[in-house]
Length: 184
Image (cartoon, rainbow, N blue to C red; front, side, top):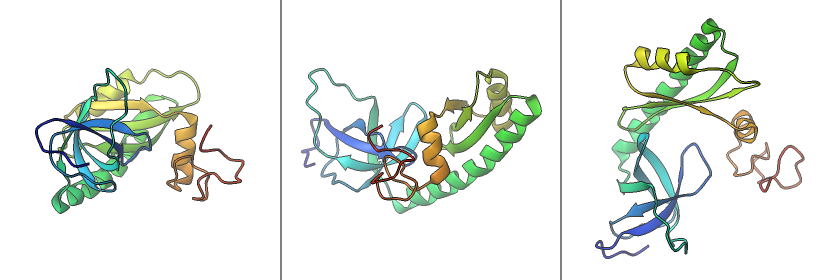
């Protein structure tokens, strides 16, 4: 989207771990689809990819996130390191949950780009109180921790890891597969 840099534009992005489009404010110039950007979110700084450069036509639409800048190679290198640290954090959290007798399964964890917060994604078969686990992990890492429950569809996508928006399990965007559908 071409922007003169004065009026904020609204840009659609997807975060690395999700497929949902988030609408974000942008006051810079010339963002194109496919570019990688740094977002300022409630969870800290995150990497995202530009998907749509035309704003939705909602009359009272106010985006929550803001695009800070186009991601640099250094940002992408830090993000790769943070993702690797997230895998280790996920194992630590699973061991802590098992030790506390909390019946949940950690699926993934992400450190924010600025290393100010960790977000854990988990599934659970029935209600479980994870407040004490959250406190224990926050004390262990010395930073805020957020625990997010994954829906069964997102957990299925994590299991297969094909990366398509509907998680068909084979990367073909759900065509002819009975496991799931991109529109369900």
